[in-house]
Image (cartoon, rainbow, N blue to C red; front, side, top):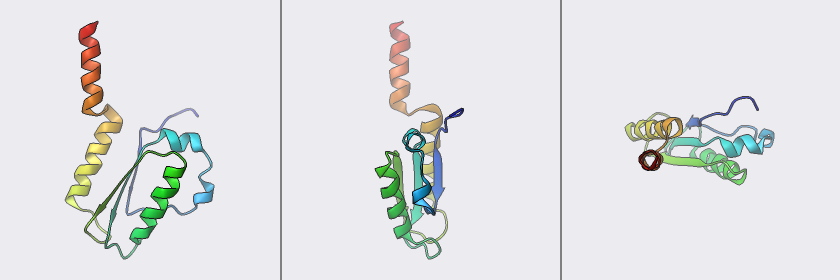
Length: 106
């Protein structure tokens, strides 16, 4: 594979063709944030549960959050998504602390 994805985001998403997820290496290398409203009447909440379970069985690191909304976004969902993006693009605070410690030791 030429490029590695930093991460993937699904909001009120569903896994349409699970049998076509045929690259377990890519699934294992790509963390996923999946936010879903528990009252979603367009993409029913059980779709998230099915998709998360299926992807986790392939080894995907899934951050699955639910929010008390329908088929829309929630302010906490946007904050959680922003935190996920920051972590996959720049590392979390633990990574930063470790890198700072390593730099000081040099």
